[in-house]
Amino acid sequence: MKRHNLALTLLLMLALCTSRFFLTQAHAAFSITLPNGDINHDNFVEDQDYSILGAAWYSAASDANYDIRADLNGDAYVEDQDYSILGKNWYKQGATLPTGTAVASNYTWNYYLTGTVNLGDWAKSPQQVMVEAVQVGDTTGNYYTMTVTTGGTFNMWVPNSGTYNIVAGFPQGSPDPCHWLWGSASAVYTTTAVNSFFLYGDPGDIFDDNIVDATDWLGPPPPWLDIDGDGYVTDKDYSIMGLFWMDSGVPDLSGTAVAAGGSYTLTGVVPFNGGFTSAPVTIEAQLAGNTTQYYSVSTTAYIRTPDVRYTWYSHLTIPVSINVPYPGFYTIRAKAYANLAVVTSTGQIKALPAQ
Image (cartoon, rainbow, N blue to C red; front, side, top):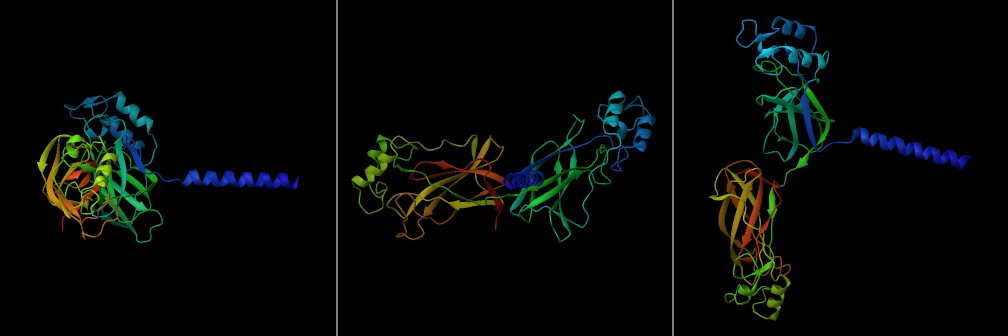
C-alpha cells in the first residue's frame, strides 16, 4: 500500500510540474488581434459606444449624421454589420497599458521580439499602432515602445534577453479610425541577432567557375593549385580536389547585382584554401524579402598570419565587410578564388550601423 501511495504521489507531482511548465511556456513570436468596437476610444466596449453608433445609424459617408468612429468595418456606411461587430465584443475591456518610463525601441540593441498586430473585423487599409513591451521581472520601471503597421511581421528591438509581456493598440489622440481595444500577448521570449558571418567553401575550383571539374585539373600554375599550402603542387593537392570532384557552389542570388554602399555594414570572415596568403573574394548581400536585387563588392581576403593554418580547409583570414543602405537581416553569399561559393540562410545576419 505504501509503495502504491508513493507511486501515486510521484505521478501527481509530475502532472503538476508538467502543467506548470505549459502554463508558463514562452513563445518565440506573437500575434495580437485587436477587438473592434471601442467607438469612443476609452478601451472598453459599452453603452457610450452603443449610443454613438445609434446616433449614426443607417447613415452613409455623405450624410450629416455619419460618424467615422461608428463605421466599424470601414465600408462608408453605419448599418447592421457594424452593430454585429459591436455586439460580438460587447462589454469587453482592452489590455492594461504598462506604467513607468517609455523607451523607444533601438535597432542597435542585439535582442528582438518578432510579431504581428492585426485589426479585428477590418479588411481596409493597414493602420499605424503602438506596441509596448515590458520585460518580466524588470525592476528599472522601463518599458519599450515601437510604432508598427498592422498586418505585417516586424521585429521589435529590446536591450535585454528574456521574456516579455506585450500590448498593442492606438494611443490617445490617434486619428480615426482607431476604434479597437488594446490587445496583449504574454510570455514572449527574445531572439538574439547574429551580427557577423563565417563562410568557407570547399576547395578545388581553380578555374573559378563555381564547379570542381576537369578544367580545374588542368588549371593555372601555382600558387592556386597548392591546395594544402605546403609550397608544392603534388598528388596531395589533386587528392583534395578529388574529394570535391564535380561538386558545385551555391548559385547566384536572385535579382540584379547593385554596387554595395550605404550607412550599414555586414562584417565576417571568409576563410579560403590554397597555398597563398591572399585571394580575391566577392561578397554579396540580399535583404530579407527583396528578390529583385542584391548588393555586391569585390575585395581581398588575407591570411592573418601566413603560417597560421588550422587545416588545409580552414585558413583564418582577417575580416571582410560589405556596406548596405538599409537596416535588417541579410543573406550573405561569398565566393573566394579557388573555392566554391557558399551562402548563409535567409535573414540570418543583421546589418549594423557603420562606424
